[in-house]
Image (cartoon, rainbow, N blue to C red):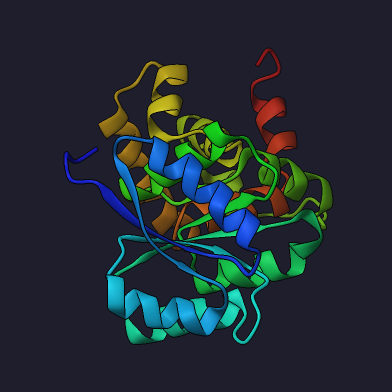
Length: 224
C-alpha cells in the first residue's frame, strides 16, 4: 500500500451503518473516510466535491440506486473505484452490477477483516468478491449442462489458477498455493481474462461457476 491514505466515501441511507463503517475504516492507518452520503444523488455530488479514491456504497440506495450511481460513474469516466455492499437476496442485482463493472462486492454482515481485505485488494487494482458471496453464487447461480466450453481448452495450470481465483483467493494467495510468484499469477490471470473474453476476476468467477469448474477441477485433480 502507498504511504498516502486511501480516501473513502461511504454511501448508505442508514446513519448507524455509516457511523459503524466510518469507525472501522478510520481505525486502519492507511484509510481515511472523507465523506458520507445518505443517498445515491449525494454520493455522485460528493465524488466531485471530495474526490475520494474509493466509494463504499450500499447497492439499495434512495433517490438513485447503487446501480444507477455505478452506471453514471462508468459512463462519465469518474476516477473512483466502487465497492458495493449487498445482501444475499440481491443476487439478480449483483449480477447486473457485475455486468456494469463494479470493482468489488461485499456482503453486509461480513467480518471487519473481509471488508478491510476487500478494500485493500481493490486499491491495488484487483477486483474483489466477498468469499461468502462466491459460496452463494456457487449455490444459487443456475449452472449449465456440461458442454464444450473454453474451460476444456485450458492448460492444467490455467485451470488450477482459475479454480482458486473463483474461490476468492488473491493473486498472492494463489501463488502461495501453487508455489509460484505473485507476478507469474498476475500475468497468467491477465491472459486467462483474454482467453475467456471476460473483463475482470469477478466475471471470470461467474463464467467458471456457470461452466461447473468445480466438477472439472476435481476430475482433473482427484486428490486435490
